[in-house]
Length: 121
Image (cartoon, rainbow, N blue to C red):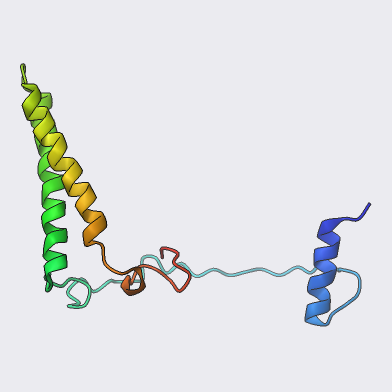
């Protein structure tokens, strides 16, 4: 029976040019903690820009609709008697807000939070 791990290691060693039996080596990896050392510049104009196109204004309106419907849900939840048309209206506003995000979303190629493979960073 052939061990797949050993075949992969043999292939890796051949690619590196160090063919032969594997010998364990010991070394320590020193990791630098730079979480607290970084200071993001929130006043950077590229990070926070006002909407400058119609699509971006519609995206802002979509998020306002979503937030307003969530607030409406919380308000209706505490009312003692709530008519069905009010719940349907709030649900409709929420659905319109969420669906409009799909139409107002920008091109994924211009998203600064994605790397070249489309993975969120």
